[in-house]
Length: 615
Picture 1 (cartoon, helix red, strand yellow):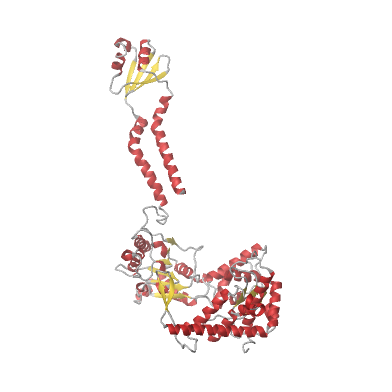
Picture 2 (cartoon, rainbow, N blue to C red):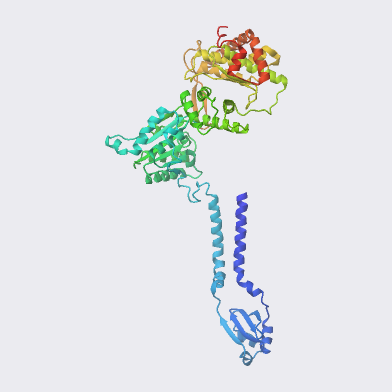
């Protein structure tokens, strides 16, 4: 609406301006006195007129005293004939100098051209502003630039260049990409051996693991131009635009080859064809077809390497993954503890850290964090230190930032009553105590009753080293820990006072038990098989599980899930009943201190880790 009003205002101003120009030729005449032909004849009869200038039907009269007047006559009639009708004789006209001139100059041409070209000029002005509005849809290339590529070109320089040294960890991934760098630097060495470098490299990994950073590092190491686009930038509302942009993108890359073409989130256009969406003229499928042709069609794209990134390789079309297209697939995994330490060292370079800050300890506290998470962690710690008017960043600020990244900011304004605060303390104490007493549960790192995100309190437990496999014993212990808060509330307050607080814990416990039974074959009764086939439905945009078992088997699954949950609840209840004094001590400390770190927690409990495994 605002843009429409702006264009309407410009249109009105243009019309007023044109009207002003059309009438400016008459402005000077309007300030001169106008007389009738009868008055002109009387003035000539009295010999008061010196000259009369005739320009078509306009008369400019100069009197003997130098004053000027104007008048008009009929078109096509000569002035002497007109004056003769008013009784003037030729002898009376002899004393008047009559000058006949033709209109010319810029006023004449303006008067002639405005009626013809004025409307055309207005249409051109309106079309220009409409094209400016369409510029966003055309990727910044004007209203006629829909089919042109909106890819951004980067030429690495010393200030913006990213190299493998700036990418911590990812040793195997960088080794795969070093061959691409070597080919871009010295292609003749490979050609002489008869080898062909992969035409496409597909980077696969979870969001935030550094796929885009790796692609930039390849360009920086090779020192070649870097064209990058997002998969969603290919597709527009107009049919054929995506395919045209693909052609333009590769055309630009050919002109500056050797070069790297990077397509981020390629699954936006590279999903499996034949899903039935969009009909036979689906714009997304046409775009995908053009990408396939450009990568491996009749024309060769020597010197161009396509790097794409996605976190959904399972939905990509098989034609993209065949040899000759994306020949090489590089999996970018979550960083392990050593890689996390190296990543933290990179992001800590420009941070003022206190000497007590241990990056190794932070790496231990951040399993499952991506590179983006770790960058955000260090940034949040720096912001928190500035907010507290500190000159350096201490370990406390970084540990609080870990909680913020995991759970969200503190909700200090969310005030609990004393009764609710005590119930929360018992709830979190139940989680923490059960986790500490069980052998296969991860160590308890922090317990807090400060509300964060949607949680009224939280218990943070993390392993001492990275895990890639989980055992049945760990699942069973995690089930008991998940139900520890529910059992603690029931133990202290009784069945009638069970609150809605454990609702998320119950969902977590149900998910753990069901996965153990249906996905990991950990049920003795059902045996080592999986139940349910996971399918990805493009129409729904989410994955669903298709049943591949009978109704009778479903009943057995439900009974096994219920058995695992009930056994875990009974186990947690025994532990808390046997160590009720420790639960009370944890609760009192939480009510007083609100947050308890690992060392303080172990001191309060005063029980060896895993000592309750046999209870």
